[in-house]
Length: 407
Ligand SMILES: *Cc1c(COP(=O)(O)O)cnc(C)c1O
Image (cartoon, rainbow, N blue to C red; front, top):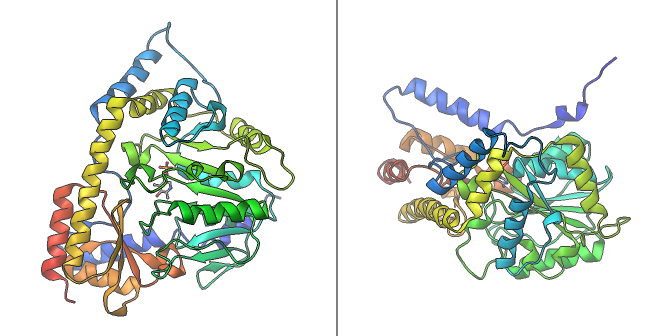
């Protein structure tokens, strides 16, 4: 008798984007002439750049030739790609070894899977609001009870509020696994060295492990802000870092990411090297490596020309972010984020709920965004706008907000 994993039944998320789509469809059916402008979803829009396209083509050509053909590659990812990643981190002043890197098909799967190397009774702490996969993967694994008022029993929530600048302090109680995302999706907040140091000190003291999602690190322009948690002293003893080519290079549909498990990272009952070996074991058992074509593309991203082109892409999206931020502030709306991250986190005017503002923005300005409450209860009263989009579409949407939104 097969039975299902009943933990799936606890999942509350998966509701956000379908509900946005449902309300948008209803609006379009009622207003067939209106053009709906989408600033909702964190998906890249600009084409791959020439150096990166050539890298991918080179990957295809290698497969077309008996002399250069390869099948399964190194399980952790191609050595040259991992060495190029080592070189990138050394530019941040971070020393890592190639066998501490695990190349993957993206940061979302790694963020979901990393929990499987930890025991089921680990207490998990997450930022509230948060990118949903940290919570949902632990729900499916069975580390939580049921959800009540948007929070799962057994999880520790760290509220991200205006008062703490959307970067929480470490929990007051003892937790074992801590998920942090900086630059943050959805709030656009970026943790400073001092803020990360507080988490590192906490983790070392409690033998906890930090899972640090740095998917937007390349969007940091302020040289004083850390792009990797390993820039913080002690993090190499307590942190796993996950990153991706998705947002930096427009690889959302191409699929390539990496996870770093330093051999120095330990936890209760694990000696140096044990966590690294466990993740190696997990990946070689359940995953057969990223596409060799795509890894050639990744190598091109990390080349000097590739990095220049990616900086151009990032500059383009960050100009969009400024267009949104400045445009809304002119209307007297309070905004956060949007300077070292491609998301604007706005405070809904007049104390409206996130969904009330969603309906108002759609009905009056014909613009679709993402209600902050969809990312966790502390997101209530906030709203996320994404800078990923063609500049002319963003400009049109901002003009429409300025002309039509009744405040
Ligand atoms: C987009 C995003 C990712 C990237 O995931 P991929 O699977 O690499 O595309 C990871 N974390 C956060 C917070 C994101 O917003």
